[in-house]
Length: 236
Image (cartoon, rainbow, N blue to C red; front, side):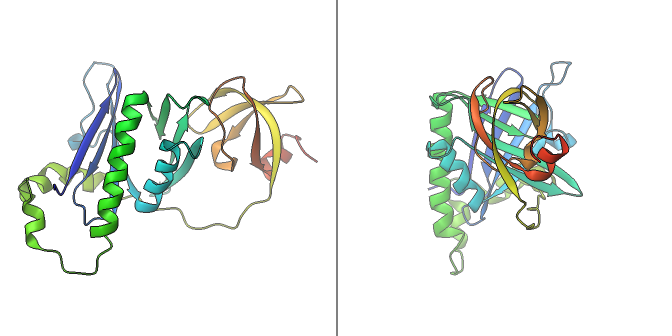
């Protein structure tokens, strides 16, 4: 049994690398990089790319999507007054294509890649439940399974520097209203929704508190904070 895991999912222009340094650490890293206009991939060692540190609770929510129990899951990470929007969303009800959006990075996974990610995160979570929550002193031999521990730390040192992410503080639950509409377009931070009045309004993702299918021209219900609906006179 190894103490660390790494799996990459690369496309033509964007790549996501899932990493965990030790089964005794209660978090998982998702590292995002993309190809620059000159054709060269971003380098984390040069402070390029984006790395997010997911807690075990967040891994559970990601697995809810991967296991088909949720259509999508969204969250925000805050660091130095900068918020990073995160979403794991099925493209449609067939659950064959998954979209991962982390800030400005967007990666599509096909069915086989989704299954690999699901099995990997399930395995990692099960390991960490055993080793990261144990109160017993960890045996030094844990770090000598198949890799030299110092080498692992060297390879992952850049990730630690880039992944000091904190969860946003708890806020009072806002007042919300369910309203029907269909998605016309999407950006990293908002979706353009056409409502029954045929009005099209950009709605910040942070104000939407329901699951939705990120598929255009698909009528569905959205649970949206009242202040944004009142701002555009969508409710009285």
